[in-house]
Image (tube, rainbow, N blue to C red; front, side, top):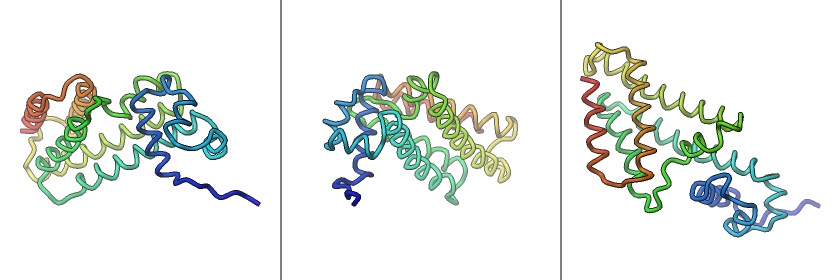
Length: 193
């Protein structure tokens, strides 16, 4: 007879995200996971197999939550520039409230793990494409309504804006000075005029 799990897998994934996010993939040991997740080593192996599989599931969970937030804002009926500002504010707001200066879990995985791990690299690329596409759709809509200049190609503007997002996510690892991010957002929006 199969045993029932005596823990909530979503709660465990949330804890795993925090551990990997704080310590990095390579800095996280199996003992760190056992201690931090509050489950036995055997339950960890039975449920997730190994550290890599747990990391992938944690990264997937993080990506799904982030994508849902981005899509909700990007698909709103608000004017394009307002939508882009809301997206940039969402990203910086989450980063600025982080007292541990962890940056973005996805960007951290991109820098630390993706160069050596094809599965993580594919996840990062898919996530990047999804966010870039969200910016593209909003910018294209803004160009069609006349709110955003057509001097630049919509895809080029989307790539520029997304690259700015990545820069914000890295910068947040070293500063929480809101004025820095306000300047970045203001200049990014000015590029759309």
